[in-house]
Length: 261
Image 1 (cartoon, one colour):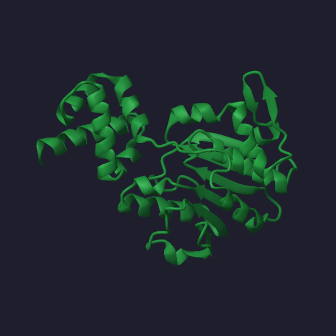
Image 2 (image 1 turned 135 degrees about the vertical axis):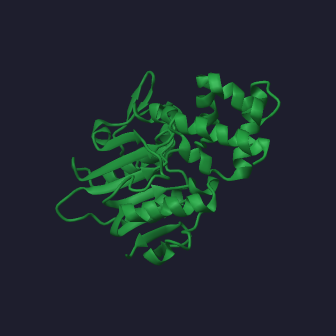
Protein backbone atom coordinates (compact mmCIF):
# COMPACT_ATOMS: atom_id res chain seq x y z
CA UNK A 1 0.00 0.00 0.00
CA UNK A 2 1.39 3.43 -0.93
CA UNK A 3 1.53 6.36 1.47
CA UNK A 4 -1.25 8.04 -0.50
CA UNK A 5 -3.45 4.93 -0.27
CA UNK A 6 -2.84 4.77 3.47
CA UNK A 7 -3.79 8.43 3.87
CA UNK A 8 -6.98 7.96 1.86
CA UNK A 9 -7.92 4.99 4.05
CA UNK A 10 -7.52 7.20 7.12
CA UNK A 11 -9.69 9.86 5.48
CA UNK A 12 -12.31 7.20 4.69
CA UNK A 13 -12.28 6.19 8.36
CA UNK A 14 -12.93 9.78 9.40
CA UNK A 15 -15.91 9.96 7.02
CA UNK A 16 -17.30 6.75 8.48
CA UNK A 17 -16.91 8.22 11.95
CA UNK A 18 -19.22 11.13 11.08
CA UNK A 19 -21.85 8.82 9.54
CA UNK A 20 -20.78 9.45 5.95
CA UNK A 21 -19.35 6.04 5.07
CA UNK A 22 -21.38 6.03 1.83
CA UNK A 23 -19.14 8.81 0.51
CA UNK A 24 -16.19 6.43 0.49
CA UNK A 25 -17.97 4.69 -2.42
CA UNK A 26 -17.75 7.81 -4.61
CA UNK A 27 -15.97 7.51 -7.94
CA UNK A 28 -12.21 8.00 -7.35
CA UNK A 29 -11.84 10.96 -9.72
CA UNK A 30 -14.75 12.79 -8.10
CA UNK A 31 -13.54 11.96 -4.58
CA UNK A 32 -9.97 13.08 -5.33
CA UNK A 33 -11.12 16.35 -6.89
CA UNK A 34 -13.28 17.30 -3.90
CA UNK A 35 -10.59 16.14 -1.48
CA UNK A 36 -7.99 18.40 -3.11
CA UNK A 37 -10.33 21.38 -2.76
CA UNK A 38 -10.62 20.77 0.99
CA UNK A 39 -6.95 20.17 1.73
CA UNK A 40 -5.93 23.25 -0.22
CA UNK A 41 -8.57 25.30 1.59
CA UNK A 42 -6.98 24.13 4.84
CA UNK A 43 -3.51 25.13 3.67
CA UNK A 44 -1.99 21.63 3.71
CA UNK A 45 0.09 20.06 0.96
CA UNK A 46 -1.00 16.46 0.57
CA UNK A 47 -3.42 13.73 1.70
CA UNK A 48 -1.18 12.66 4.60
CA UNK A 49 -1.14 16.16 6.07
CA UNK A 50 -4.88 16.44 5.57
CA UNK A 51 -5.46 13.09 7.31
CA UNK A 52 -3.37 14.38 10.22
CA UNK A 53 -5.55 17.49 10.35
CA UNK A 54 -8.72 15.39 10.44
CA UNK A 55 -7.35 13.48 13.42
CA UNK A 56 -8.03 16.48 15.65
CA UNK A 57 -10.43 18.73 13.68
CA UNK A 58 -14.01 17.46 13.97
CA UNK A 59 -15.41 20.51 12.18
CA UNK A 60 -13.27 19.81 9.11
CA UNK A 61 -14.51 16.21 9.01
CA UNK A 62 -18.04 17.60 8.66
CA UNK A 63 -16.90 20.13 6.07
CA UNK A 64 -15.32 17.35 4.01
CA UNK A 65 -18.52 15.30 4.13
CA UNK A 66 -20.48 18.35 3.00
CA UNK A 67 -18.00 18.99 0.16
CA UNK A 68 -18.49 15.45 -1.11
CA UNK A 69 -22.27 15.71 -1.01
CA UNK A 70 -23.92 17.10 -4.14
CA UNK A 71 -27.20 18.96 -3.62
CA UNK A 72 -28.41 20.04 -7.06
CA UNK A 73 -32.18 20.25 -6.74
CA UNK A 74 -35.26 22.41 -7.16
CA UNK A 75 -39.05 22.22 -7.21
CA UNK A 76 -40.23 19.98 -10.07
CA UNK A 77 -36.70 19.76 -11.47
CA UNK A 78 -36.89 18.30 -15.02
CA UNK A 79 -40.65 18.95 -15.42
CA UNK A 80 -41.05 16.33 -18.16
CA UNK A 81 -40.30 13.58 -15.63
CA UNK A 82 -43.11 14.76 -13.38
CA UNK A 83 -45.52 15.12 -16.28
CA UNK A 84 -44.79 11.55 -17.31
CA UNK A 85 -45.02 10.20 -13.76
CA UNK A 86 -48.42 11.62 -12.81
CA UNK A 87 -50.57 9.43 -15.12
CA UNK A 88 -48.63 6.31 -14.08
CA UNK A 89 -49.51 6.52 -10.41
CA UNK A 90 -51.84 3.82 -9.18
CA UNK A 91 -53.25 3.91 -5.66
CA UNK A 92 -53.17 0.64 -3.71
CA UNK A 93 -56.43 -0.61 -2.28
CA UNK A 94 -57.03 -0.20 1.42
CA UNK A 95 -53.85 1.64 2.38
CA UNK A 96 -51.90 4.84 1.66
CA UNK A 97 -49.53 5.00 -1.29
CA UNK A 98 -46.00 4.65 0.11
CA UNK A 99 -43.35 6.77 -1.64
CA UNK A 100 -39.64 7.31 -1.00
CA UNK A 101 -37.55 10.29 -2.07
CA UNK A 102 -34.07 8.74 -1.78
CA UNK A 103 -31.38 11.41 -1.77
CA UNK A 104 -33.83 14.26 -1.17
CA UNK A 105 -31.11 16.89 -0.52
CA UNK A 106 -32.70 20.11 0.78
CA UNK A 107 -36.21 18.74 0.29
CA UNK A 108 -37.49 20.27 -2.93
CA UNK A 109 -37.98 16.87 -4.57
CA UNK A 110 -39.93 15.52 -1.60
CA UNK A 111 -42.18 18.60 -1.45
CA UNK A 112 -42.69 18.40 -5.23
CA UNK A 113 -43.74 14.78 -4.84
CA UNK A 114 -46.12 15.81 -2.07
CA UNK A 115 -47.66 18.42 -4.38
CA UNK A 116 -48.09 15.86 -7.16
CA UNK A 117 -49.68 13.27 -4.88
CA UNK A 118 -51.88 15.86 -3.17
CA UNK A 119 -53.13 17.05 -6.54
CA UNK A 120 -54.33 13.53 -7.33
CA UNK A 121 -55.47 12.55 -3.82
CA UNK A 122 -55.97 15.57 -1.53
CA UNK A 123 -57.57 13.49 1.23
CA UNK A 124 -55.52 13.27 4.46
CA UNK A 125 -53.84 9.90 4.83
CA UNK A 126 -54.02 8.96 1.13
CA UNK A 127 -50.23 8.88 0.77
CA UNK A 128 -47.00 8.93 2.77
CA UNK A 129 -43.49 10.00 1.81
CA UNK A 130 -40.23 8.87 3.36
CA UNK A 131 -37.57 11.46 2.43
CA UNK A 132 -33.95 10.57 3.17
CA UNK A 133 -30.50 12.00 2.65
CA UNK A 134 -27.01 11.39 4.00
CA UNK A 135 -26.36 15.09 4.63
CA UNK A 136 -27.80 16.29 7.95
CA UNK A 137 -27.26 19.93 6.99
CA UNK A 138 -29.43 19.51 3.89
CA UNK A 139 -32.15 17.85 5.95
CA UNK A 140 -32.10 20.79 8.34
CA UNK A 141 -33.22 22.93 5.39
CA UNK A 142 -35.81 20.39 4.23
CA UNK A 143 -37.63 19.73 7.50
CA UNK A 144 -39.02 23.23 8.20
CA UNK A 145 -40.49 23.42 4.69
CA UNK A 146 -39.59 27.10 4.26
CA UNK A 147 -38.04 28.39 1.04
CA UNK A 148 -37.44 31.75 -0.68
CA UNK A 149 -40.65 33.21 -2.09
CA UNK A 150 -39.04 33.41 -5.55
CA UNK A 151 -39.23 29.58 -5.69
CA UNK A 152 -43.02 29.62 -5.66
CA UNK A 153 -43.32 29.92 -9.43
CA UNK A 154 -41.53 26.59 -10.07
CA UNK A 155 -43.87 24.72 -7.74
CA UNK A 156 -47.01 26.50 -8.91
CA UNK A 157 -46.13 25.81 -12.55
CA UNK A 158 -47.06 22.14 -12.02
CA UNK A 159 -49.64 22.52 -9.24
CA UNK A 160 -51.25 25.96 -9.60
CA UNK A 161 -53.74 25.38 -6.78
CA UNK A 162 -51.15 24.26 -4.22
CA UNK A 163 -52.18 25.61 -0.78
CA UNK A 164 -48.92 27.45 -0.16
CA UNK A 165 -48.51 30.18 2.44
CA UNK A 166 -46.35 33.25 1.90
CA UNK A 167 -44.97 34.69 5.14
CA UNK A 168 -42.43 37.47 5.75
CA UNK A 169 -39.62 34.93 6.11
CA UNK A 170 -40.50 32.86 3.06
CA UNK A 171 -42.71 30.34 1.30
CA UNK A 172 -44.23 27.75 3.66
CA UNK A 173 -45.34 24.25 2.71
CA UNK A 174 -48.90 23.35 3.84
CA UNK A 175 -49.61 21.36 6.99
CA UNK A 176 -51.36 18.55 5.09
CA UNK A 177 -48.10 17.86 3.24
CA UNK A 178 -45.98 18.16 6.38
CA UNK A 179 -48.05 15.51 8.12
CA UNK A 180 -47.43 13.05 5.28
CA UNK A 181 -43.63 13.45 4.98
CA UNK A 182 -40.97 12.01 7.26
CA UNK A 183 -37.47 13.43 6.72
CA UNK A 184 -34.56 11.42 8.11
CA UNK A 185 -30.85 10.72 7.62
CA UNK A 186 -30.05 7.47 5.79
CA UNK A 187 -27.24 5.74 3.90
CA UNK A 188 -28.35 4.23 0.57
CA UNK A 189 -25.39 1.85 0.48
CA UNK A 190 -26.75 -0.05 3.48
CA UNK A 191 -29.08 -2.93 2.51
CA UNK A 192 -32.61 -3.08 3.86
CA UNK A 193 -32.90 0.66 4.38
CA UNK A 194 -36.56 0.69 3.32
CA UNK A 195 -39.28 -1.78 2.27
CA UNK A 196 -42.84 -1.78 0.99
CA UNK A 197 -42.65 1.17 -1.41
CA UNK A 198 -45.06 1.81 -4.27
CA UNK A 199 -42.87 4.59 -5.70
CA UNK A 200 -39.20 5.50 -5.32
CA UNK A 201 -37.45 8.57 -6.71
CA UNK A 202 -33.64 8.38 -6.72
CA UNK A 203 -32.51 10.91 -9.27
CA UNK A 204 -28.95 11.98 -10.06
CA UNK A 205 -27.54 10.20 -7.03
CA UNK A 206 -26.00 7.12 -8.63
CA UNK A 207 -23.80 8.99 -11.09
CA UNK A 208 -21.36 9.98 -8.33
CA UNK A 209 -20.76 6.40 -7.16
CA UNK A 210 -18.59 3.56 -8.40
CA UNK A 211 -20.17 0.75 -10.42
CA UNK A 212 -20.07 -1.55 -7.39
CA UNK A 213 -21.84 1.04 -5.26
CA UNK A 214 -24.43 1.68 -7.98
CA UNK A 215 -25.24 -2.03 -8.09
CA UNK A 216 -25.49 -2.15 -4.30
CA UNK A 217 -27.78 0.89 -4.14
CA UNK A 218 -29.98 -0.21 -7.03
CA UNK A 219 -30.41 -3.67 -5.53
CA UNK A 220 -31.55 -2.05 -2.31
CA UNK A 221 -33.98 0.22 -4.15
CA UNK A 222 -35.54 -2.64 -6.11
CA UNK A 223 -35.79 -4.73 -2.93
CA UNK A 224 -37.62 -1.80 -1.33
CA UNK A 225 -40.25 -1.73 -4.08
CA UNK A 226 -43.40 -3.80 -3.97
CA UNK A 227 -43.99 -5.82 -7.18
CA UNK A 228 -45.52 -3.38 -9.64
CA UNK A 229 -43.94 -0.40 -7.88
CA UNK A 230 -42.25 2.39 -9.85
CA UNK A 231 -38.60 3.48 -9.73
CA UNK A 232 -37.59 6.86 -11.16
CA UNK A 233 -33.91 7.47 -11.85
CA UNK A 234 -32.04 10.52 -13.14
CA UNK A 235 -31.73 11.37 -16.82
CA UNK A 236 -28.05 10.35 -16.86
CA UNK A 237 -28.68 7.04 -15.12
CA UNK A 238 -29.70 3.59 -16.33
CA UNK A 239 -30.76 0.50 -14.41
CA UNK A 240 -27.61 -1.60 -13.86
CA UNK A 241 -27.38 -5.03 -15.44
CA UNK A 242 -27.61 -6.79 -12.08
CA UNK A 243 -31.14 -5.52 -11.39
CA UNK A 244 -32.34 -5.04 -14.97
CA UNK A 245 -34.13 -8.45 -15.09
CA UNK A 246 -36.26 -7.34 -12.14
CA UNK A 247 -37.39 -4.15 -13.87
CA UNK A 248 -39.27 -3.24 -17.01
CA UNK A 249 -39.01 0.20 -18.62
CA UNK A 250 -42.23 2.18 -18.48
CA UNK A 251 -40.78 5.36 -19.97
CA UNK A 252 -37.20 4.98 -21.19
CA UNK A 253 -36.78 8.67 -21.97
CA UNK A 254 -37.74 9.72 -18.44
CA UNK A 255 -35.98 6.76 -16.75
CA UNK A 256 -39.14 5.35 -15.17
CA UNK A 257 -39.14 1.61 -14.43
CA UNK A 258 -41.55 -0.89 -12.86
CA UNK A 259 -40.54 -3.81 -10.66
CA UNK A 260 -41.71 -7.06 -12.24
CA UNK A 261 -40.13 -9.51 -9.79
